[in-house]
Image 1: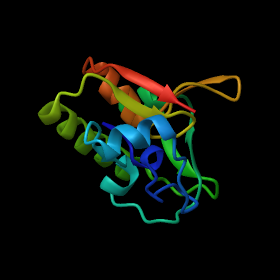
Image 2: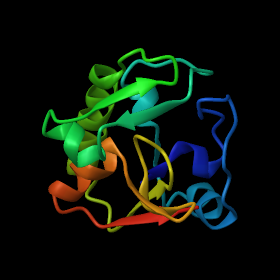
Image 3: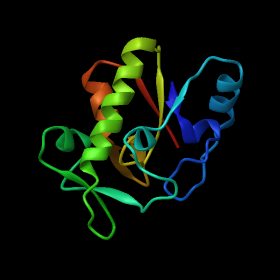
Length: 136
């Protein structure tokens, strides 16, 4: 499994992708299934940029932080819905590794611009013992 933007799907907030040749090649050979938690949660493309206000994805899962647009609109419910649906996919597919786009408030996993980022979906997958690999 991999964040859909990494295989070339134009699903990022700005309508673009972050195609990564290694991930795309694995997708084209049938070894990766793409997913986008934000789309699964009911968000549109394009959509306003979002951030986690008050912590990381783990804090959102615990109810101690929220996901908000830059204008302050709360998108926590959609983000949690998408994370849960992604977890359901992972539980069925049982992938060896899940590749996630770093820096995303949903998929973020690892260092991004000198700061550790743990998105909501990444936090939920990690809590359920899936192996994650952040891809810039």
